[in-house]
Image 1 (cartoon, rainbow, N blue to C red):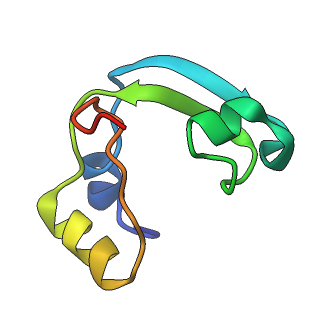
Image 2 (spheres, rainbow, N blue to C red; image 1 turned 60 degrees about the vertical axis):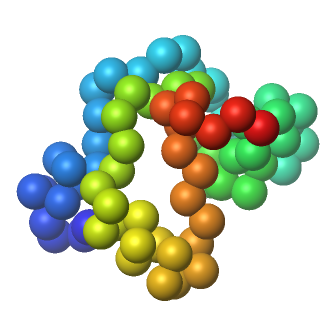
Length: 76
């Protein structure tokens, strides 16, 4: 996505619910609960409305990167 503002706009949403500020993801129970304990510190949405484009999902799968939608469509 680097260098492509169009791609960034396709994969970002301003429609979300709640947020988590992760200062030390490896030691955070909230990070483990939300499965973001391996992410870098920052601010993350709890639920995002909408999905990334299918071709982006396919590209992530080809690279072996698991995609977990944050739109509530997967209950686990």
